[in-house]
Image (cartoon, rainbow, N blue to C red; front, side, top):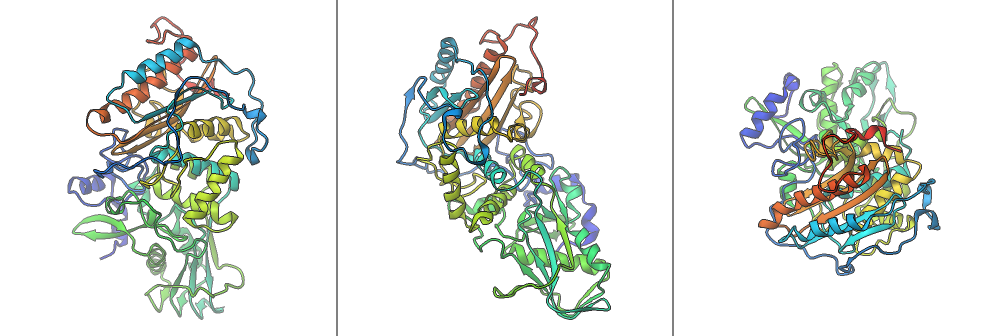
Length: 524
C-alpha cells in the first residue's frame, strides 16, 4: 500500500525507528552511511541520496593500467596563467605563490611513511597556481569515491549558470474546456533531481526540494476533470537507469535510486509497513512521479478518469504552452547540498543533465565530455575513469594530481568564490562537520570527502594569512590495519599544511599564539 497523506506528519523520530528495525530508510539526504566514520546526515544514519556507502566487496579492484606510480618531490608543471585553453573557467590573477618549505615537505613525507601498513595511498599538494609542489604516487589511478562530485560540480558550472533552474511542466494532449481536460495530462520531466512530496519537509528539511504540490495546486485552479490518464515524459534523458560499476546493495540500502529524466523523492517509492513509512528504489521513477501527481490531484478534488499512469509515446510532440510549470531551486543551492552532504542521486542527475545540454545525456557521453573538460583545463585525463557523477561506481578511477589541480583551477577561476562555498568546512559543516574539530584546521579547511568501505579520500584547500594550499589524498584497497590508518593520515597531512600557513610549529600551534579560528576572514 502506498503512503497516503496522513503520514505526511511523520517525524524524524519515526524515521529513526525505521533504522533500528533494520528497514530501508528513504534516502533524501547525502552524507555517508552508518559504516562511514564521517558524520551521519541529519535525518539519521544511512539516510538516502546518501553519500558513499560502506561497500562490502571482498575483492579488490585493480587500478587503471594507464596510470604510473610515482614517488617524487616537487616537479615542474605549467602554472595556470601559462595554460593555453582553460575554457569558460580561465584563471584569474593569483598573485604571489608560496613555496612549500623543505621542512614541510619532510614532515609530510615522514607522516606518510609512518602510516604503514597503509601502502595504496596517493598524495598531491599544490599552491593556488595549481603547480604540484609535493607528490607521492600522485599519478596512480585510485578509487575516488565521492570526490568525483567535484568534477560533477565543475561540469555543471561550466554548462549552466549558477542561478539556472530545472523546470517540470504539465501539458495536455487535448483541449481544456470549462475545467475539463479532453485527453491526457503529460508530466514532463526537466531532470529536476529534487522534485519531492510534502513529507520531505518532516523527514529531511535540509535537502532542497521542489514541491510537487505547488504544481498540482496551480493545475487545480484551472481544471476539475481529466478525461484521460497522466502520462510520464522522461525523454530529457535517455533511458539508462544505472551506470557501470554499481552494486545492487547500493539500491537495496538506499544509497542510490535509478536514474531518470523524471524522478521524485530521490527516485524512491514510499509505502506503509504497519504504521511505519519505508522506502525502496522505484522500479520506474517516471511512473512513480506520475502516480504521486495523481494522488496530489485527487487531494485537490481533481478527478482523473484513468488512475493508471503510463509513459508517453516516443513520437508524441507536445504543442502549445504548459498548463502549469514548476522550477527547481537554483543550481547553486543544489550544488552546495550535493557536494557538502554528498548526495548521490542529486549528483548523478546533474552529471547527466550537463551532458544532455551539450548533446546526449548518456553515462558514456557524460564521461567523455568530462575527460574533455579536464584536458581543456590543462589536466591530463590519463587514467581517469568516470562511469557516474556520484562516485558510487566501483569502476571509477582518478589520480591525486588530477583532483588537486582541478581544485586549484576552479578555486582560481571566476567562480572561485562559489567553488569554495560548495565545500564542507572542517569542524563545521557537511561530511567534515566532525573532522578536525578543536584543531587549527577547524573553520579553515574546506573540502570534499570520499568514502567506500575500502577507500578513503579528501580533496581540499586551506586558506591562511600567508597563502593557500591545495591537498588531495586518496587511499584504496583498504583492509585490516590499513583501514584504520587512512583517516588519521589524511587529517594529519591537512594539519601540517594548515600549521605551515599559520606560521606555527608543525607539531602544533602554541596556546598563546594568535591563531585564527575561522577561515571566513582569510578567504580570498
